[in-house]
Image 1 (cartoon, rainbow, N blue to C red):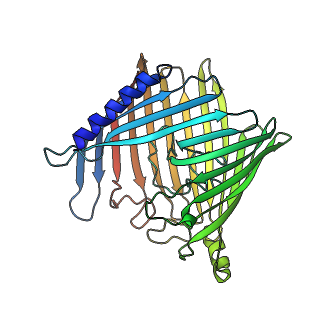
Image 2 (cartoon, one colour):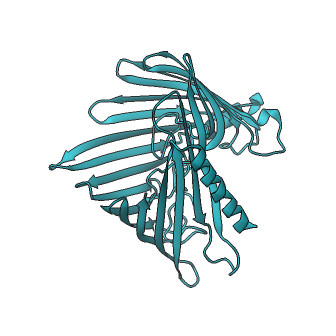
Image 3 (cartoon, rainbow, N blue to C red):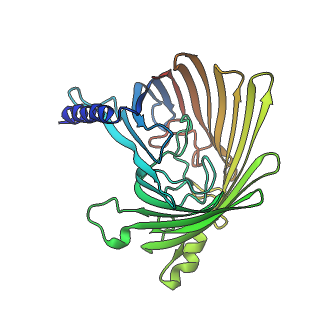
Length: 375
């Protein structure tokens, strides 16, 4: 049945390609060898496996009043399955259309709505969440989750608009109150970008089971040489007796700096530093705590020319002095073919947020090498 589902999906993709002849299909094929080492309390664990990934996208030309995008991805969830089982996983990454009417714009389908700023930490990202540390730092984009939604955007100035978003429940057995509602106002004050709004959603931060919460947020972005951005959000819960506790547990503040420097004739050096602050979080080291008062994300990328790219990314927990560090290099060879190499290590003592002693699903050291071809 799994194989039939895969061939059925491919048949649908072929049909879509015929129907949307104006959309040029783009295939991204990634073939990586993954080596990992886990320092456990018993015998160390070594793993070597192949991690193939592929995606196919059909995107309409950037012209006209109607645009769309369809992207499917294929991956092997577990290469250690029994012989005879098909471990291929097929997912719809994006499937949406955008329509520009004279007085408003409509977006419908599976996509992502970008509220606020921040590549890893973003307190304004209420609808998708950008505060966890379970992120693969080898990915080009760190936050890529999408949801089925409908949004309407009404402009009221050259750089100002109002947006309303509706996200239906993901479960079949649902109540109307499980629908997620959101809205924001985006405008500029001189060179300062000002954005504020809120969402009605499920409580996914506080430990108290309050059901639904209303989450207001505010986000600012400007420039003083480097670009800077900051955001803050909080959950307002009910009943009234639990409001104070929910406010303390859910209050998030994020901020960042980004700067690009020209190096030599063709080279560029980009620097980024982001921070996530929980004012009422834990400000002293505690065993296996993922709600510390502050987390940092430094990133350095050096591109000497069109062929090479070097990067260093890290998630740092200053309170327990631990970090997850990823370094990588990419060589663009020819005709969309590139070779990649990444190494990731956890640097921390046992019980730290990023402990060298392996936690389930988190090896102490990992290396990934391979090739990618976009055609």
